[in-house]
Image (cartoon, rainbow, N blue to C red; front, top):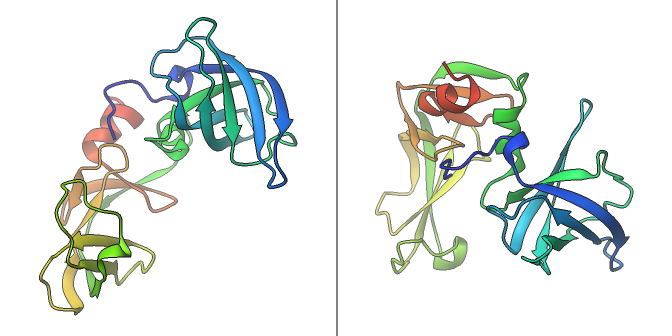
Amino acid sequence: MDWSTPKRFDELPVFQITSIRVGDAQGNSRVAGVFHSLESVKEGPSYLLGRTPESLDSVRGLITELSTDNRQAVFLADANISDWNPTPVTLRYLSAVWKPVHVWMVSVPTWQFERRVFQADDALAVRRPPDAAPPPPTGEAVKFWLEMTSAASPTKKRYYPNRDVPEGLVSAGWDHEHCELCRGHVNAAQVGYVDNGGRWVCSVCYQRYIHPL
């Protein structure tokens, strides 16, 4: 994640809703509104975020019909938010490059973290076909993917192109976690911070964004 610009809730672009209309039979919504500023706003996949003392809300969708003259835009929500009736009607815009949980992590003072030393876990290595994962950003031709699954947390998986590792149980094969904010590594024997959802933050990002010194 690029944190060169602020991502706290109160620093995100403001989107003032003027109307909400239910779209097709799948329950999508057409949300019209106006931005207070177009800085960092662009057409395409994004989220609208709402926060009250009682709740944290977000909906994914698509910014379209963005006007640089009057800052008006349409947000095509992937869900029916007519029943949501967001209060206040002033929401915040977040590019889909990030996720709402990242905003909540650094914006909610009561978000809980546990300081922990990361310990490597065993992993299960299995070869998968070239279409098992999206193409790597390096453009490397994929003959096969090596799927690594954490033995301690089977829902955690990673894919490595053409990595020549024998299939089966790999001792200490799950040897790092990724920081949610900078995507850097928290390696074995390093200190990190884990929230209640099992998301890791490195000590640098924790001190920089969550609990600044």
